Image (tube, rainbow, N blue to C red; front, side):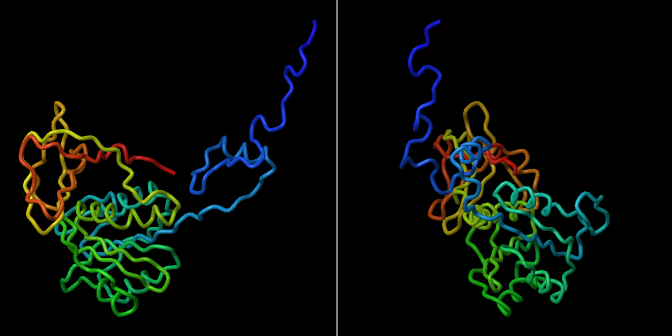
Length: 276
């Protein structure tokens, strides 16, 4: 059988040509990417390191995650949630367990050899809220108090080279503050886009969404029949408001809310579920 000239013969440059850009900086490498790099004789290349994130949960009233609440004690809901969020955003979570409301114990934990510290609980202005004062005395407390509902006690600063985020103890406030502030920083440090990892849809409101001028509102909503239904919720400790919700709507600080029929942007919770 006669064979045509060049048949089944690989040509120089048919895969990657000289001078061609192969990958842009910031790309998250896939398995086939590493194979292509190896075929080009590249065994090593500079990458962004994994970000180590220390999760400090404070409170004398807390039981270990998964424990049965009893009396005046409640089970830690925030550390499992924060660990999952940190992994989603490219970090490596470290959880030393629940800390007592003791200034010395909290200060030693703040000095952990990590890139970012998340403190959940003790971030407000109560008698046992030690973290803001400790950060102000031993580091830098850049911001404490945000015009937002929920999450108003949120703070952030720095201790030596560590970024420190003070997150409220109420679970919904903790989730909201993480997404607005800590998550963006961790994603940026990990080499990812700082944008929220949630897909969005635009739908009209079935009922009005009430807010107040001067604060940002994080409103949990459900999608039903191509409309957006705001959830009636009791407070920042009602974590089930986020599990029943399909997503959330952000009401800006210059708005009193939106009347029914207004088309709003919904950030979808499920689209942010990834892992590493």
